[in-house]
Amino acid sequence: MQDRTYTADAEPGDEVTVAGWVHEIRDLGGIAFLILRDSTGRIQVKFEKDEMDDELVETGLGAARESVVSVSGAVEEEPRAPTGVEVVPETVEVIAPADPELPLDPSGKVDADLSTRLDNRTLDLRKPDVQAVFEIRSAMLRAVRERFRELDATEITTPKIVATGTEGGTELFPITYFGREAFMNQSPQLFKQLAAGSNLERVFEIGPIFRAEEHNTPRHLNEATSIDFEGAYCDDGDAMDVAEEVVTAAYEAIAEECADELDALGLDEEFAVPDGEFPRLTYEEAIERINATGELDEQLVWGDDLSTEAEKALGEDVGSHYFITNWPSEIKPFYIKDHDGEPDLSTGFDLMHPRMELVSGGQREHREGQLIEGFEQQGLDPDQFEYYTKMFKYGMPPHAGFGLGGERLLMTILGLDNIREAVLFPRDRQRLSP
Ligand code: ATP
Ligand code: MG
Image (cartoon, rainbow, N blue to C red; front, side, top):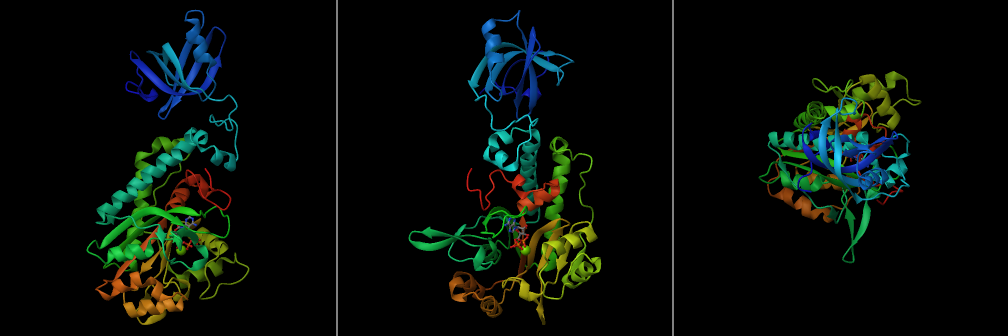
C-alpha cells in the first residue's frame, strides 16, 4: 500500500491513510470510535453519526473486531484520545473482514492458555507483550551476529540432513533420504570444527538443531535455535570469553534498543545488564557448593552429572551467570579435549544462568589418534565419521568453541516461564503444527 501511514507517525494537520486491525469499537450513542491498530500502535477514528455519511458510519462501525480496514481522513489533535490525536474519516474500506467468533482475544482482556495461543499464533502475536518478545528476539540475534563479526568470526551455515549423529544415538530424528536412513542434525559440532580447521579459522552459525528429547519440559524443544562458535588457536578459556561477550552483548542491545518492548513486558524497571565477568567455578568446586547448600537428598560425588535440582541449588547460591569448568572427561562428549596429562579432567565447560544451562563448550581434541580413541570410548564407530576424522590428518590446529541455546538465552533474559514462549511455532512432543 503505497501511501499508507503508520499510526505512530500520524500528526495533526496530516491527511493520511491508515490501515490495520479493528482493535475495538466504542459506541457512545451520537458519537462512536473505532480504535485501529497496526505494528506501531493504535489510533482513534471518530464517527459523528448525525454529521457523517450513513454508509461510511455503517461500514466503520459494522466491521467486526480484528477485521483489516483502511481509513483515509484528516488527523486532528484530540487531548482526550489515547494518543492525543484522532482521524476524522472521509473513506473507510474493509479490506479483510474477520469472523466475529475469535478463538482468542487479541486485546488480552481474556486470558488464553498456552496451547490455544500457539494454535492461533497470528492472533496471539497481535498482543503487544507477545509482539515484544519477537521484536526482542530479533534484536538479540542481530546483536549476537554483530558481536561475532567484531570478533572476526565468519557466519556459516551447515547441513541439517546428516548421515550420523554426534550427541549419542537416542536423541536423533531419523528420516528417509532417497531410500537411505539419514537424520536431522542435533548440532553443527563436527561441521563447524571442519570449517574452523580451514583458513576461515573463526566461524559462527545461528541455525536449527533437532533433538528427539524424551520428555516435555519448560526448557527443552525438539527444534531449537543454536548459536554456535568455533575458533582455531582458541582454548577453553578463550571460548568462555567469547560466550561471555556474546551473552552480554545481547543484554546490552536489548537495554539500548528495546525500551518500548521491555515496557510492554513490564520489565523496564528491573532490566539489568550483567556487569563484570561471570565467575568460573571448577566442577569440583561446584559439587562442593551444591553439597554445602543441603538442598539435595543425596550428596554429589565426582563423576555425577548435575541434575535439574542440583543446577537450581547452585544457581540460587551463586545468584548470577557463572561457568562450570573442568568437567570429568567421562560425562563430556568424545570431541572435548582432556587437560594435558590429566585424562580424567576435560576442558569442557558450561555457562549457566541461575535458572538453567545456556551453553556447553570446550577445547576440542585436534589430534587424530586421540580423537579416534574417543569415538571408541563413547561406543561410536569411527569409520562412520571418516569424512570428519580424515581432515585431522591434514593440519588441524588446536581449536575451541561452544553452542548457546538461542531460546534459552531469550527465555532467561526476559524471565519467560516456558521456552515455547520464545519460539513462534514450537516443536515439542505433542506439537507438529502449526
Ligand atoms: P540439557 O542438559 O539442558 O538438556 P544439553 O547439555 O543436552 O542440555 P548441549 O548438547 O550441551 O545440551 O547443547 C548446547 C546448548 O544448546 C544447551 O546448553 C542449551 O542451551 C541448548 N539446547 C540443547 N538442547 C536443547 C533443547 N532440546 N531445547 C532447547 N535448547 C537446547
Ligand atoms: Mg550441555
